[in-house]
Image (cartoon, rainbow, N blue to C red):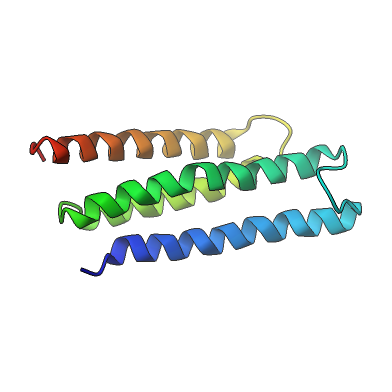
Length: 130
């Protein structure tokens, strides 16, 4: 069984992860911080955006893969996954601001809704009700 949705989303996640790392690296270089955050608030926010992506994405991909393996996914699963990835990009961009702005709020809201929705679907599948 080829998990096309999971494979595509894992590839997207890898690209976003690299993009987040590059954003941190560029800021590190410009602020001459080789370890930690060096007391730089902008670098700390970028590092947290990267860490936050790494914290949420594995469980999201696991849920997507598990649902896809049951063959209960379909096109809706790919759309949900794409929205999740877009939300993580918005969240990262929103983290550049010291205030909790719209991009960050949208990013975390979509992330939470995605995780809750996928979790509910997974439980319903497990109970034979989906």
